[in-house]
Amino acid sequence: MATDKTIVLITTPSRSLQLDVTSAESIAAAKSHLDSAFGGLLDVLVQNAGVMPYQPLRDNSVLTSFRETFETNVFGAAMLTDALVPLVQKSAKARIIYVSSGLGSITLRLDPSNEWRAIQGTIYRSSKAALDMLAACHQVEFAGWGCKVCAFNPGVSRTSAGRRAGSGG
Ligand SMILES: NC(=O)c1ccc[n+]([C@@H]2O[C@H](COP(=O)([O-])OP(=O)(O)OC[C@H]3O[C@@H](n4cnc5c(N)ncnc54)[C@H](OP(=O)(O)O)[C@@H]3O)[C@@H](O)[C@H]2O)c1
Image 1 (cartoon, helix red, strand yellow):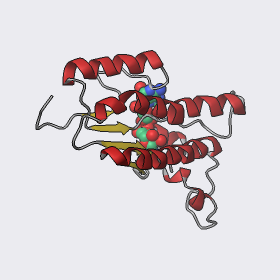
Image 2 (cartoon, helix red, strand yellow):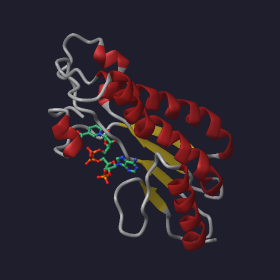
Image 3 (cartoon, helix red, strand yellow):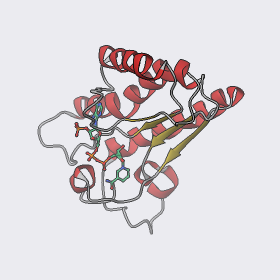
Image 4 (cartoon, rainbow, N blue to C red):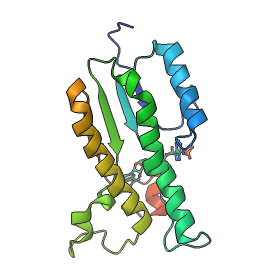
């Protein structure tokens, strides 16, 4: 569908599109919506959805919490990209942006002077480090068809995730 508009999907709550990135059915429904509403074209995919478990853990086991966090922050992002790439491939201004976090930086985690050193956040940090690698791999893989891919650190904001982390999300 030729258009001068830019079609953008941001994984954040929306009245027009319900999406759970951990559900293959929900992703398929979102793809169908994009097919019918925008002729199967997507210019920009912003993978913003993320969860941040409170640490130290209260009720969940380490394994459960790792699984739940990776389901959204990593596996969900990978599934959504995989499903929507055919739509993004139709765009002349193709972009995929993964919302990551400075807490996922291995370099910063090992820096004794880092301002967020006292925040444990091992599970969240590990998920964002994995997301960064997903972004790096997709940047290399998708360059051949003109898609620009990046991981983006929005910095600290007082959102529910930011508050759960005690800031530094
Ligand atoms: N806040 C910070 O300081 C900070 C810093 C660096 C990076 N980030 C990153 O920024 C992104 C946005 O976080 P935020 O701070 O705005 O926190 P937030 O208010 O908790 O937003 C997270 C969003 O992800 C959505 N989400 C969670 N699980 C989902 C799923 N399975 N499928 C679809 N959507 C899902 C949530 O939807 P519901 O509300 O419907 O659950 C919510 O809209 C996250 O990736 C976070 O890691 C935040």
